Figure 1 (spheres, rainbow, N blue to C red):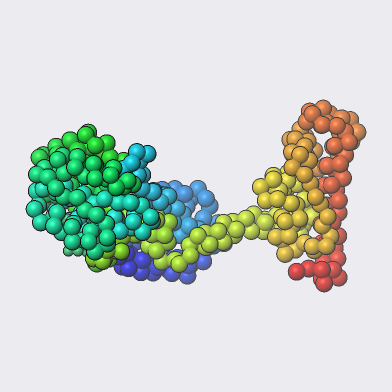
Figure 2 (cartoon, rainbow, N blue to C red; figure 1 turned 90 degrees about the vertical axis):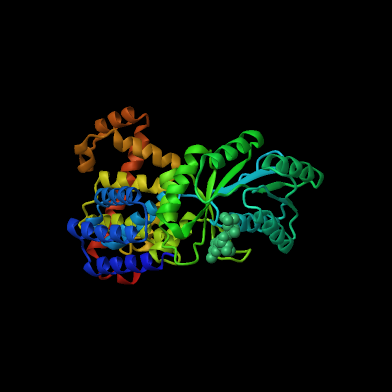
Length: 436
Ligand code: GDP
């Protein structure tokens, strides 16, 4: 699944990386290719359109063009947008707060519904839940037998007695209570097409048994059809999630990309083979990384985010080199400090500043005070701190609710930093051993 999409995207990224700096046109062209690749993977056109609009807006907003790693920034944005349409966080099963919990499994014939019931039972029993499988698909007579065989294989009890779904489920509830089952997984009627009779029956089951989950099983290989089916079921039944089956074969994956965005219901599992253990929890983040062809994207994203910080630092470094470090810069640094930690940690990130020259420890309270003091200054004072005389200091202290001593301390701190910067600039070569 997704192999084609992934290799197409990799090719697009490779081209982007090769370009170094990007123009708006480069981005547009790349996104056009991404669009084509997504459509070929059978993702829903509405979903693709929205995704790309968002990526483009963000790419332009976030100044990707000026960044030193534009391709990486685009991939990062794409990653988050993909994650968003895939549903963000993994959504867990809700087994309800009454025992037994009831999971209704619904879907069309051939989608893999019965097999999936057994796979799910196996998984939950592996997680130490006591499960009862219930065969309530009286429309396809062989379904009950199939479930029994699967149940035997995985050593999960199966209940199929009764002539209609209500009778069967009522009977199963009794047995489940006797057995102290945690959850009943109910295989419901499956038809070849969505018809009123089936939907009415399912609605009745929902009204009578209040399941904690109504999971729709759809065949992932059918791509757009899977999404259309999900949309139709969702109109009639309060689905709580979707299970996409057959995601192992040559499924192009489009259904996985579109189901959540179109129906608003999360994908909870994907079927990835015919064997009983071939049912996986659906992790949007892992899939997004897989689609983008990145092993450990989480750490890559982290690295890129650090890069953004480093770019900010590079700008500051430029100013430092010119000894043009005024109180506005100091203010920005103090704000950064609140986020990052100690002043040392920030300066530590600059290859330019000798480590052993820094000895600044500010508490959060002090930082807050300093920020308030700078906020009470006029722009002129911030840009040219040497004009801040005694009466100005009094005014600033009053304005910021601090004392003249506080203002003095801030200014001392600032002038010391400035002095340090100047010294470094002057004796750069001779101080070389201290530089990293
Ligand atoms: P039902 O009519 O919806 O109950 O469908 P079944 O459970 O009988 O499954 C139909 C066919 O799909 C069977 O041959 C299953 O083995 C197969 N199947 C179900 N899930 C998967 C899956 O995730 N991958 C593959 N490759 N086959 C699957």
